Length: 198
Image (cartoon, rainbow, N blue to C red; front, side):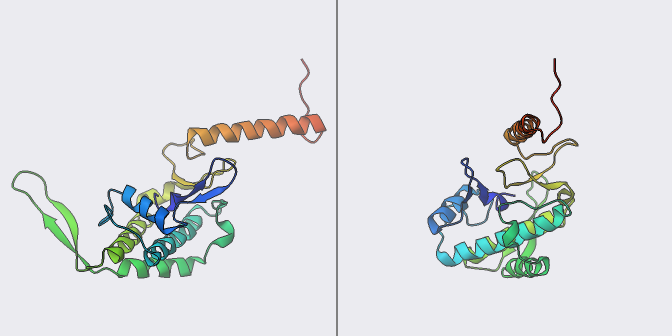
């Protein structure tokens, strides 16, 4: 979700891409504590392109998940075909050879981790992002994925309760204000339902 959310509303009616530059990509990577090799990793244009490629695939597949509902308006006109997105995601995940390893301390529960045979931290990072997307898209949370359609929002989110329609309360407030505005504007111009007189 963090990768898909690097395309977001800028607060002024436009869309911001946190990965638009190498510097922005480096800043985003360093904020992702759970990613392998993320701390201190500096992006270059090749790494930025790899991450953006995975994000494009993820957002195209997210659009497929939420269908027949509309996808995020941020990049709906740029979505690659689902088959191409699958190929790109799987190719990125396959770039790193990993083997599962079991850690079992004397005091505590066993835990699994992946041991990488890859030396290049850039390859490891892109592959880890792709594997995380594969895990999400093949897991049970996929069924709760939604595109937020509040005015000016472009995010995808995981629906956490039955009546949730928006990614954040502020989006719900904007949607309600927009609906109210449309109703009152329509009533004033005679295009909407008539206003009730007191």
